[in-house]
Amino acid sequence: MVEIRQLVTFRKVAAVLSFTRAAAELNYAQSSVTSQIRNLEASLQAELFDRLGGRIQLTEAGRRLVGYADQILALVEEARAQVPGGGEPAGTLAIGTMESITSYRLPPLLEMFHHRYPRVQLSLRPSLCAETCQRLRQGTYDVGFMMEAETEHEGVETEVLVREPLVLVAAPHHPMAGPAAGPVTLEALRSATVLAAEPGCAYRDLFERELSAGTAEPFSFLEFGTIEGIKRGAIAGLGVSLLPQITVAEEIAAGELAVLPWEPPFEVFTQLAWRQGKRLSRELRMFIDETVRLVREEVPARSA
Image (cartoon, rainbow, N blue to C red; front, side, top):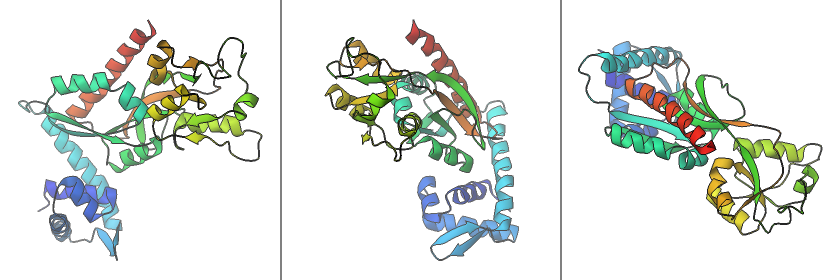
């Protein structure tokens, strides 16, 4: 007989292609994961994984089972959500996100969920947009936040939450700041020290493309690991930086950073995404609805 927990374990192993990692993420002993997979294979009379030394991969039977497992587990979640008396919303939502969104968009949402749905645990997983999309397709993340120029992504559904304005900033005493400095040109930026996040950040990559256009080599940034690090560097006069306006609003208001007269020729959008075709649990549907509501209520308030 096939058991639901065996399908849950199979789906996790199929997503991460590692018994060890699946055991860690499911809080099982590795021997328990191995036993469940073997019992499932015995019930189905088919091998689900090829074991190649220290690596595994899905067999043809395993690949076919993934789709059925997804449907069965989605129906189980739907039944739990829809059957009367299902109880208080509970469970864990794995959420892929990035620093700028976690720090500047999510606090009101996290606070609301903590107080309104105390049994729903939101597990935030830092990741760049490409990794978030991959994890959503694999089923490792339930939902993900992205800041990208593109609003359509293969294998995932997206809800555009807000256009994120980008601003070029520097310390007020920087040579490019102040009314006497005049408009900022690409030529001037190519000669400046530009502070940026690591590759993979959408607006950094778009900015690099602009600065590298027509040149023989990619533009070289002074890279920092975090937005806070970039801001501290800019305030200290180390260079200029292109950042989402929401991340530097306080520093601009306090006079620690100045907005330079340069309009980026590209846009990025904060988006919420989940796997295409995924049956949404009650908790995930609530999270999506509350996120859309809170972000769209907050944007007019910030603009007022």
